[in-house]
Image (tube, rainbow, N blue to C red; front, side, top):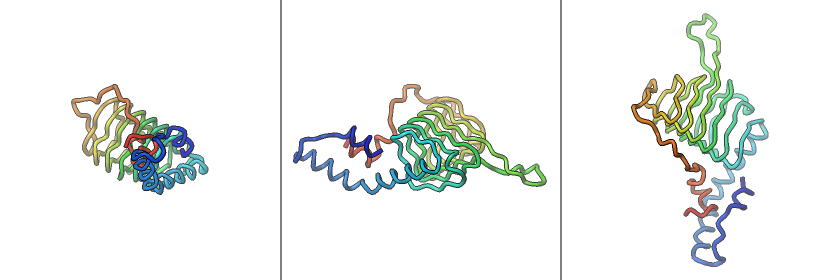
Length: 196
């Protein structure tokens, strides 16, 4: 991640006011960036499959990191992920703070209250808003939006927008022309790429 940023960094003229501004922002946001790099490296050592660059905020992880996959350019906020099964996060995905990804639950009809698991798949350019909850076995389609505090119990189609508890599909869809790169709008990344 650091080498990628260094390679793609903005290079303003040495000593210019732009150079001073860029380096001030880089130094100011360095702790946040290095903490994310550390979290990414630690997850990688634990078996997670992460395609860099990506950004991960402080999070709670229960289960085997090897069940986690994060695609290039994705941003994962302060979330809680239960890895009883696979969680596959595509490219350029935004997962905001407070999101809960549950790959396991209990069968209320089973007298032994057995654990029921299922993967969570979040396809490219999806946006999971603050406080949403995804339950076992759901797939969030490409470019789909899960509204704040929504509870997703079934699959969400590509480019659909869902809200509520349980989540329901709104009568409008998101544009299919999604070009944004979520991590490039983070202050700690932006400082290196020159979009200040």
